[in-house]
Image 1 (cartoon, chains in turn green, red):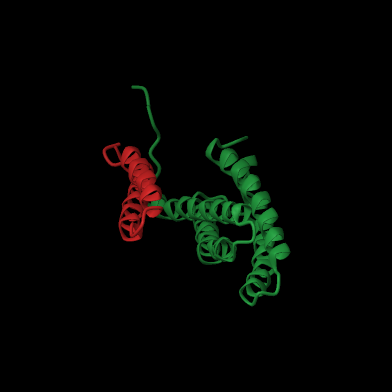
Image 2 (cartoon, chains in turn orange, yellow; image 1 turned 60 degrees about the horizontal axis):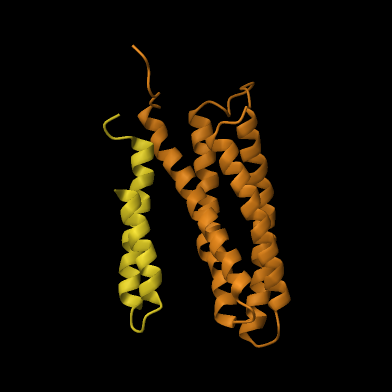
Length: 153
Length: 50
């Protein structure tokens, strides 16, 4: 009989749900942030919204995605000593860890920028830098989602 | 069906939010849209019936 679809063990479902759900939240937040900062053109409300999307939605999404990733990798045996590391998994780890640094820089720079905007002392340049980082993150995440969903060898 | 609900309510939320006093209705539509997306994810991972 032909196997049409391989169903994973039930115990993998929840960690995978956390990982994919977190990734969806993260990508949505980064897209929202980049878009709001791109179209703001000096509008303080949109500039702050762009930053808050990254802080209030993006950061928890990242944590959820990364915790879920470690959990599901452990369940699938990829964390065992001597276990093979497929290309798609390597891309996932590299982008997740590299993007954490970029995300933190974007949050710190954006936080200072948003504070200056609120006090009416400029800060738009800093939020523009946050927007550029958000666009870089978006490109990296898009490539990663493609590589991981397609199980690139 | 879930895709249709998510897309329909999401699009409508955007339109309604731009109308005067439509924020409350837009929030409800947005919540329905988000719930539909969540159900799509649950459906894809747990594959009920597979």
